[in-house]
Structure formats: C-alpha cells, structure tokens
Length: 425
Image (cartoon, rainbow, N blue to C red; front, side):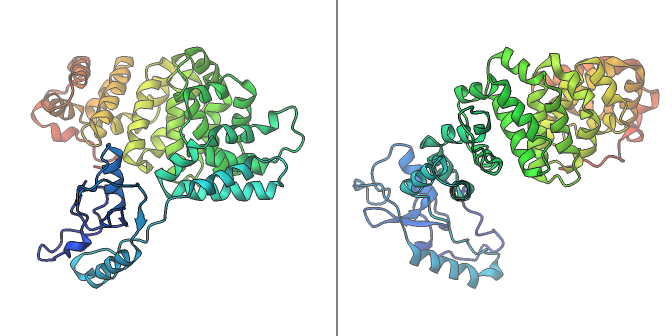
C-alpha cells in the first residue's frame, strides 16, 4: 500500500524516526486517517478499506474475525500525529490534513428525497443538491454512495425537467445544480442512450454550451462527452456529432480567455469524443478547432495534452483537417518537439499526425525536416516504443527520404526545434 497516502513524510532526512504506533500496520506508512476496527486495532483508513475490499474478514494484526466492519475514527491518535508532524517540520514533514468523514447513507437518502420532491420549493431542493455536491467532492467513496442510491435517475429527471410536458414549474437554477452533480457521477450505457436518443435533451445541452456561465457551459460539455463515450450505437453517435453547435460550443470553451484547467480538460475531452465520428470531423475544422488546439496546447496538463494530440491526429485524417493544421505556423514544429517528451501515447499521436501532414504536401515535409524530425525519428526507432509507433515512424522516414538536406545527417543539431514551448519537457 505505500504510495497511496504516503506524502506526509518526504525522504529529506533518513535519521528521522517515525514512532511505531504512528505507522499503519498494513502499509507501514505514517497514518493520515487512523481508524479503529472491532478488535481494537488501529489502521489507516485507506489501507484497512483495501484489506476488506479484497475479501479479508479478519484483523490483519490479531487474525481475529472482524465482528463488524465499522471503522471508528481515532481522533486522539490523529491529533498526536498532526502534532508530531508540526514538531518535525524542519525534517521535511508536512502536517497531515484533518480528514473528512464519509457521508452517512441516511443523510444522502434524505438529501436525494428533498432534491427530487416537487412539492418542496426550489430553494430547498437547490440547497439539498449543493450539499450533495459538497459530499461528492469530498471523496470517491461518497460519489459511489450517492450514485448507488438512484441519484443518476433523479438527477436526469431534474436536469431535463423543462422538457417534461407535465411540468409547469421549471427552475433553470435547479436544472443546472442537478447537472453540476450529475457530471460528477458515472453513467451507465442505458442512461447515456436515454440522453443520446432524445434530440430535445441534446438540444438543451447544446443551448447550455452558449450560456453566460462558464461553469454551466463546462458541465454541459462534460455530459455531452460522457454520453458520446458511453454510447456504443454508431448511429446515435453520428446523430449527436452531426450538430454544428456542439462543435462550436466546445471550441468556444477552449477559446474562452477565462478558461481554467477544468475547462480545458473538459473541452479537450469533449472535442476528442466529437471527433471520433469521421463523417463529422469537418465540423470541428469549420468551428476553428485546429487553431485553438495549437494555441492552447502549452496550457494543457499531461493527460489533456495526450487527448489533444489524439484529436489532432483524428482531424488530420481528413483533407480539410490537414489543411487547417498546416496553416498554423506552430503545428509541425510542435508535433516534432513532443515526440518522446510526454508519453508513448502522445508520441504515437504526434507521429501519426505528422504522417498525414507530410503525406499531404512537400511544404509540410520540408517544415518537418527543418524542425528536426530526423533526429527525433532516429531516436524513436531505436527506443523501447511499441511496434505500431515504429511502423508509423518508418512510414514517416520513407515519406521524408527525399527531403533531407545532405548536411542534416551529419549535423542534425542545425535542425533542432527551439522556438516551441511544450509542457513536460
């Protein structure tokens, strides 16, 4: 279990001794959330929960049967650990935060009942939804609990209550608070299909993509991405991805100067999902996706950068997509520089996009050579990458064979790219 909650002590001073009773008997790491089981032994919550989740029914230390699985917080020990952390700050020890306790099922049921009750006023229902959202933010366990209590069905009804012909008391605020909670929970395939197969529901989400609130726009994009990714039926995917406004709204989220990390993350995921349908990728091009992906790339976190590169590769598979990316001066240099810099997946996408671009025109091939692609490809084919990446690299090398300046082989540093800022380098 080391590594799941062991950030409290940094290995700055090997002479520092952690008191034995502060260590979890399972992980041997400093406990962050000590809890006591029915045998009287104390463990770190994450460790004992994992122990029980794998089917164990005995106490790890005493081997006695656990008569019940109630975990009682050991507040006294946690406070002692926190005091020890503060006292040893000079050794690189960080104070563990006071953990938030898991939500009680009875409380969650009560809040869901209040949120779904049409006889309650909107303000009471919104208050219940906000409390549920706060619990969902606290932990994965809380989200699982909320999801298990029929929350998704309740929230879907509230989000789209304006489409219910029998409802004459639609509250936009109530709908949007429900949406904010819904996108924190996983949807089943049947629930995704329920949304995907209803043009009115997709239309409502499309409308929200242009709302004045950036949060509502992000949440709408997040649900659209979840629905597309969770729908296997190709005809439903094609139907959704045939809506111009979805591409335009998602691209506008990425273009928004106030966009913060979550906005960029959701925007990139949604755009990738929309581009999975080849027949409608031209809509991404028309919406200006090529320019904004390249412009916002330095602002992306690692996983989002992988998604962005995969999206570039998908769009480059259509002629108009190739033209749009080729028109941006930074596209080819950026794709060359990210090779071997972010991850294997990112490298594969970058090479795949370059294959499409370099197949499209001699100008793109010359630009790739000038950006230092020879050095990158030679390193790549000799690296421990997948066979698929090597095959793409070999295809690209053949495409560029007639474009190498003679001196580049002997002095590849002359063609190294140095002007493009790429994160994680």
